Image 1 (cartoon, rainbow, N blue to C red):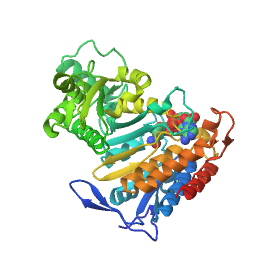
Image 2 (cartoon, rainbow, N blue to C red; image 1 turned 180 degrees about the vertical axis):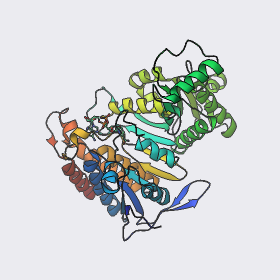
Image 3 (cartoon, protein in one colour; image 1 turned 30 degrees about the vertical axis):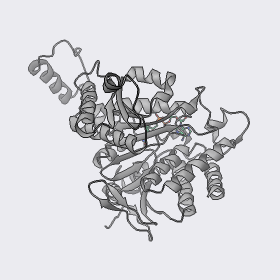
Image 4 (cartoon, rainbow, N blue to C red; image 1 turned 90 degrees about the horizontal axis):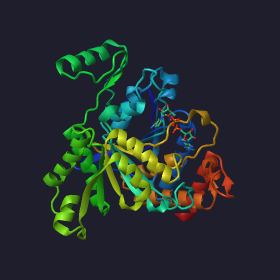
Length: 420
Ligand code: NAD
């Protein structure tokens, strides 16, 4: 494929899809991987992550042929557009990619590029692991109790972008439809009103919950928790829960049981080798993450709940500088940190690149390079636990050495080389 708005590497081979049905990949030892450094601090954490991932690949007998692709500010400067088609095509074609944060101005009229990218590629599962690394300061007393992974639905909910601005003809048409045709009176106040729609489908819910259950089965986890606010939003969030239990019934045998079956058939005693699917109301869940942290392992939830919950969980294991993520769907992976572009620190070589580096770890895992992925995790942990940290962690610990973004990346690379 010819790209005009992408830097194509001279070496490297493309990743192919080995099995359409399972999404299994055929990964060469020198794959071409598209990378978007991103806006704001993306210019700091992007190159840092690239350097660490190169070192981990090299230490395990492989190499990565990086393909620089552009979105956000860099794309605007170079091509006068936010998200060039070539960027989307490169990620679609090469299947596995990594991106830094992209800026979305609040209420400024253009849709989030992150949401646009995830929706265009139909990457329906946003996966956010939250685990504690030794030496990372935390506001809670037992951060090591958290070892959880959140599967957040990525294409629906109030994030789907179906909304109308107050005062527009669209908003007034929807108001008239609701009041006149649907006989919903006295709910919307008089005067300007912004209106948004919250679609939650059976298809979207089941494919996301299936990913979470399959992950839990493959990784010997004991529970999957469906998080929803179905007591209030019965036909959207309540339906998500019901479709989850329906899926368990329809597609999984005796190895996956519901919490009701656990009590009815097994007196609450989970049989060896089974997976229990339970559910919790979202507000209660945010409390339980703090009070009963170790009871939760795999979470499946909708877009908005998942965004809030994984940020809160991220705070327990060290904050936005640490929390990694990745988007999956149709045999593709787009890794990206949870944090945004933090514009006030942009270009200062100051912020923590760990979240982007650990997002890269998720990507390496997806390639099937678990040895390289483990090496990245261990090297980051060794670096942080020796007190060599960026400013965000340094201000929370006694002593230690404050490193710049690039110095931290160098220290992790040194540890990769000594651990390999
Ligand atoms: P943010 O995550 O960019 O920053 C909030 C604060 O968190 C920062 O001021 C900083 O104190 C801290 N922080 C974030 N990343 C850090 C790091 N790597 N190391 C140390 N500290 C770090 O959130 P925001 O200020 O709400 O958003 C800024 C912009 O980023 C907005 O335009 C928003 O839309 C966008 N955003 C993008 C993504 C994405 O690309 N996936 C995600 C969230 C926000």
